[in-house]
Amino acid sequence: MTRKVLVILFVIFFTIHNTVQLQCPPGEDEDNCPTDCYRDRCPTSEKDGRDCVNSGQCGTPKCKCRFNMKRAMNGTCIDTRDCPPFECDRPNEEYVACPPYCPTDDCRQSTADGKCPIFGQILMVVECTPACRCIEGYWRMDGLCVPFDVCPQHSTVPNRLE
Image 1 (tube, one colour):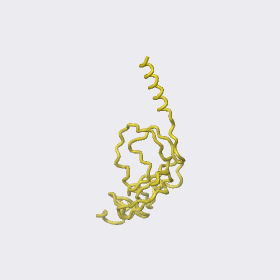
Image 2: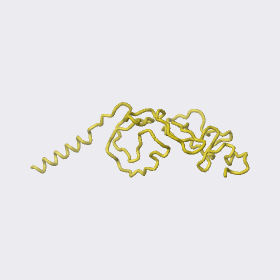
Image 3: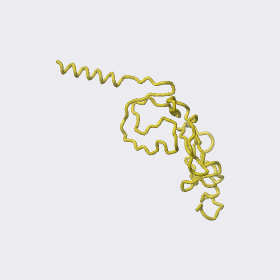
């Protein structure tokens, strides 16, 4: 009899525990299976959160900021574009809160006129990820931002940047 009661209590507890909804504040949604690597706070550097290796296991359910929102220092969710900028360490780079959709800022991705090959409006919403991007007229080669005319396929300079 005691064993049956314990089993019934366990089943009731388990059912209630798994059906209780989190009460998330405005701008947040419930995440029933958060990953180890999910970062919903405003980044403080370009590398913030990129070194994390996801275990593939679900964490404890919690509230997370909605799409294209990040958690500010005060704990509220704000538009990703409103996160405070972080420092870009390499020359000819600048912080861009929500870079335009262009595969990368690598020389190999540029067009003959030095522009991004993706132009106009695209018919999808992409995640806004703050990053350090090359300043206008510069493209990335071997990790550094160089003037467009130094990019090998468009070079007017005899040798690559040494």
